[in-house]
Length: 241
Image (cartoon, rainbow, N blue to C red; front, side, top):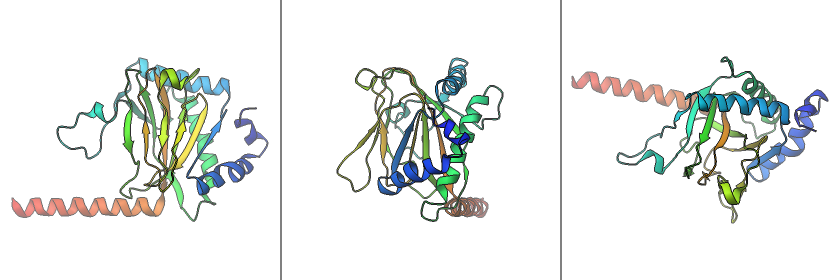
């Protein structure tokens, strides 16, 4: 039974309490298979493919990369940011609502995190030319991102042939976690330095949708730092002119 059916049985809280919350607290990551089922999952995949084929996906940007570093040597995905309310994104919006409800149940049990907002959805495609994303941390600098959620859309994925594994290097652990990007799988992990991760080279078209949930206090402090830095930069520019 698709996990989405559990919500109709008012069983979403049990799913969060018995599977997601314990795994996040103990291991720092968790995934659920069969989230939406074939019909709804196919609808999301169709909309992502339409974005890809229409040219809506653009090269992913790098934050703070050094000059002379070739973007594709670090990340080779093409992305688009969507809120879900755009025309042609109805199924994606349905997915986002499902994840929002699940996270809202989890948030109250995750060590006092005040999770009240999230990013837009990042629709991503690795085009199958061996592109990947080198080992990195989503939130190394306290920007507010708390939980990373990735929904995969890849049918008949064979990691031996297609690659594309997401490998997590849990901080302080002697093991790695290899997550296959399988159709209708939803992955959760802490966004901070506890979970460095990489996307290994993909040799088939690989689709995913990622959203980040924010710790409201850390997010507010990050915004204050940005405002202060901007004001200081403007003041220095004014005094030197």
